[in-house]
Length: 429
Image (cartoon, rainbow, N blue to C red; front, side, top):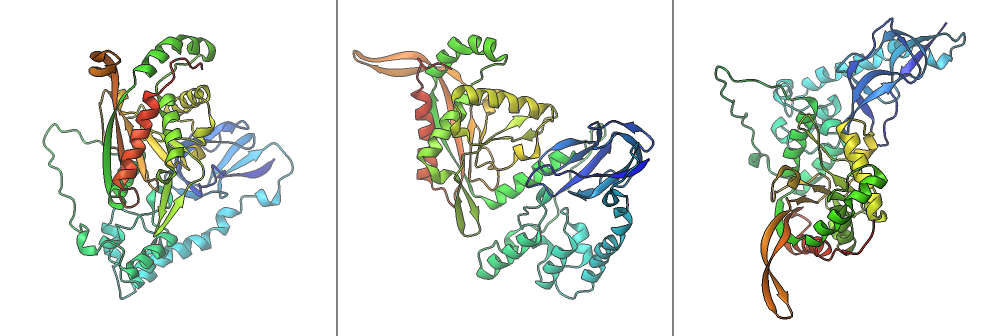
């Protein structure tokens, strides 16, 4: 019998660590190769980790709630094989103890510094800070109230060394928000009365809340509205949806048609497909459209359709259905939630006519698609104006006013509406 280690697998190029959610097996349980052993959470998605070997789960090295780096051992499996790779023997747990003690010693060392916030200030903060970030903050005399305003690009929005050094550079140049303008007051406590139900936020809801607040703090949001006549689209979909259902075994929704129009408009206005990095503007080559999907839990997730401009309408329809289905079943891969350059949110699916969506950082714009409604409208004809019943919807375009002015933001959403209104009734799918 040989002992091998189960390693935290690589789950995407941008994923460096994962949090153990729950173990599906316990020590002593028999497991098959490729059988799910535990559930983990990254800053992108929750997923299951399969076993790389068949055997018996001998020991669990990482407990529930523990954050583990990719490539680190998380369990020991006793296999039927007589040979074990020396590198796979379960020695990493004991070898990692000096590193653990070093990490634990750093906060105490930081607390002895004379400048900046003290350890009790960090305990009062709702954000997690690594010992290194705490040390830099103390040396640079950054109070916790100010540190809490620094946008984080690490796991679950954590502030990394790169983030705080970039902030310090901006701070020295006077381009940051003054601490006096940030709120250092504690949140007003909620009143709780008899019969009230207290619901603890889950991990995803906490992440969404933090990222939405960060986005509103980072980007000055402006929203432009356009009403589009989508009668041709409604008539065309009614004509071809049954055929599509028979051929593909799935429904033809309006979403792929909207995404196609967005991708075309981005090609016309490439400066909407950008990101901000300090005082630099990064113009993205690829058009990767994020599509907000509501989960059964009520939370929201935004998988990405990469190179959306390279698909025809049928391809987009199949991609939209596949991604939405796997998102609701919690089967998305971490990389499918990263790399978006522009996002859309279909608020019309909830019966809403318009909305003011919040930008997905580091993108600079997002489009909300309202409900399609029948309305009386004035139409111009060769024999004069007439009133007719038309299908109309509102497009709500929120954009980052640091880099997208009203002219660009307004012209872009108008162009999306133009593509929708000029939809060809005679095209096939």
